[in-house]
Each structure stands twice: as C-alpha cells, then as structure tokens.
Image (tube, rainbow, N blue to C red):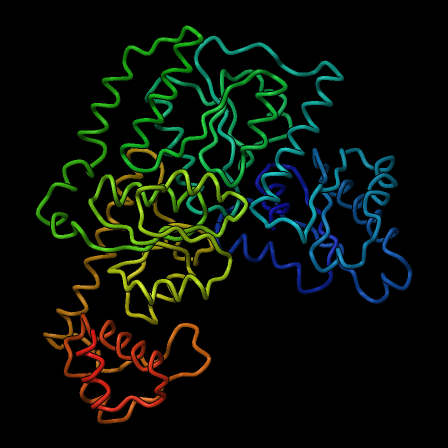
Length: 494
C-alpha cells in the first residue's frame, strides 16, 4: 500500500504490482475514497498457478513493456505484495531484463514487506524515487540548481488516500501565499518526474506529517544544503510557531518578513475562530473533561496539544501505533497526559479506554468502533479512517482554517453525548438497549432480567459507566452472573 500510494500520487508514474488475485483492490479503493476524476491507476501482474509453473520472469517483463508502450509513463515502479514476497522471486533481475525494452525508467521498490509498515514504506519509497531522479539528473547535469529570486518552498508528504491530505494541501498553499511565499513543488500528490528535477530551486522544504517526507527532506538537506521545517501546523499555537519557523528561514536568506507579525495577528483574531470560542460559555463547560487520544504520531501528538493547551481538556491517555517513532512521540506529549500508550494492538487500546472511561475519544476508525460499544463519542483524527473522512466538502486540519474544523470536531464530540441524554428525556429515540459485552474479555458476563430492568432505571448518560463498573466488580470477584443484589453491592463498592 505504501508503494502504491507513492506511484499513484505522481502524475504519469505507473505502478506494476506483482501479486496474486485478491491483492489487486487498490484502484477500486482509490476511486471510491478519493473520488477524483483523474488518478493514476495501478496495474496488477497477476501470479497464478500457470505463471508459477512457467516462471514469473516472462510475465513481469511482458507487463512492463506493455504498459510502457500503452501509457508512455515517465517512470515505472515495480513492487511485490506481502503475499507474492513469500515466493522470494528475483524481481530486481526481472526489472533489469525489462530496462533495455522500455523507454521509461524502471525502478524496483526498495521495501522489506515483513519488517516495516505501509507508512514507513511510503516514506522510504518516496525518498528512493526522489534520490533516483536527482542523482541521475546530477550525473547528466540536467538539474536546475538556480534558486528562485523570491522565497519559495517544496511541500513534501501529501499522498493519495492520505487523511485529509487533499484539503490540507490547499490550505497550506493558501497560508504560504498569504506570506508571499511561492510554492515550488508539492509532492508526491500531483507531482511529476520533471518537477522533481526542479526541487533544488526552492529555498527550503516543508514536511507537514512525520509519517512520510522526512527521509526525502533529510536527503535534500544532506545533498543540496536545503533546510526543512517538520513542525505540523495543527492548532492555532502550532500554526503560529510554524509561521515563526518560516520567518526565521526567510530572514536568513535575506527575504522580507516585515508583514509576518500582521499576518499572524489577523489570522489569530479573525481567520481562526478558536481563540475566542475556547473562552466562550459553551467551551467553558468542557473544561476538565477527560479524553483519550490515539492515532498516528503526527495527529495524536497535535491533538493532545490542542486539547490541553487550547481547550483546557484533560487528556488521560495519549497514544500512537507508530512504534518506530516512540521516542519523538513521548517527547511531544510528555507532561500533557497521564498515560502514554504505544501499541499496534487495538484490543489493548479498547481495554484502556474501557478502564479510563473518558468523556470522549479522538482516534482512528478502530477507536470509533470501540466508542460505539462503550457509548462514548469519538472524533476521527487519523488513519485508518472511514469513507466519511474523505469528504467532498473542504475540511482541512492544517493551518488557521484547520483550527476551526478541529474545534468543531472537539466540541461536537463532547456535546453529542449530552444530546443523547436529552433525546432520551424527550422521547427522541429508544435508548433502552443495554450493552453487556466487554471489549476483549473471552468470557462475557450474564445479566439476569431483573438486573437489566434495574439498570434501565439509571439515567442514560451515565448508564454505560455504571454498567462497566458493575462488570469490572464482577470479574474482580470471579462472578459470572450479575443479579440485582450484585448490582447494588458493586455500586456501593464504587
């Protein structure tokens, strides 16, 4: 998935996936989620029993030369899948055999499928493509090394199927335009191979997400002395610090930064609504509320900072599934949360949420499912996400406009829990069903009918919390059946 995201994000870069039937769903997923009129498709070189019997070399070489003839791409990226990697075929040899017969450059994705995840893969493969093009251009002396006369940047890290990447790219470009900074290249989404040869014209690079783009930015810094900013402009405070970082780099090269203070003041007071809304009566009711945050390292860290520093909300646990980025994540959220959770096990996340019983969750689609089972509202802030998190409308998370979207998400996530209680009071919907399943327990508890009827007398907005407390008491005391008597004893014990 990481390799295909890179290839399909570029224009006229064609990916050939060496895979069995069943792995070739990328085109369907991309068209369904991104809903773009024009996107670069992926070709599957299907491995079946006939191919295995005859050997895959002829099939792979034939697929490469056919797509080169049909589409005339600038680059062909060949990648296996996790399934086809088991065959341990020499794809590098197949690629070398296809090169003399192809007008386009052919590159084998440098990725070890069973050692890194798809986020690490897309970071590594993007850097591999950029390095390949620039090193070749440097050898052939075709790179444009002259810097632009006015301040300019490259934005690295917007991908096909990225979480809100389409809108974040627009918002970040709009912010830079307001600062008088030219956007030299945006990659890989919408980028071209010819555009990569112009990367070195920019004054510096911006990497908005840690999950992809850092390796490319580090390569450009090491080889071409191009500095980069890797601060994520999410939330009004981090966006303002992001602008200050840009100001420092522009000033170093002698650029005009006199209007930066005015730009920050205007956007803080007018473009972003969060500075005054956080002080309003509505938001004051959220002070001290408890939340759990979980997702990729970029969005989870940023959301933790926003909740604590800008909204006055208590984060009882912040976590990420990016285990390889644990040190950075701990440094970012240290002192802002009671607990830090680094895990790829979604059941552990669910158990932690059930134990802490927060007022709201901010996580992935997985945590949204957990929240539904525990009757806790959840705002999705990170991939993996649902199709509803790929909206047709404009909903950026970055920049000053992004602060408004995030503030709405936070406010609505907390308030909708209260709305359920009001709907129950006024007969808006039936809330009489009692959830009695736990998140990860292999031995579900049994509630007697009398105990369930007694539980229904508890107000709906706290019923889930009471139920979980009773079940926790029952498991602690090795009880498998919950009666009315146990219900009352458990409530007294709390």
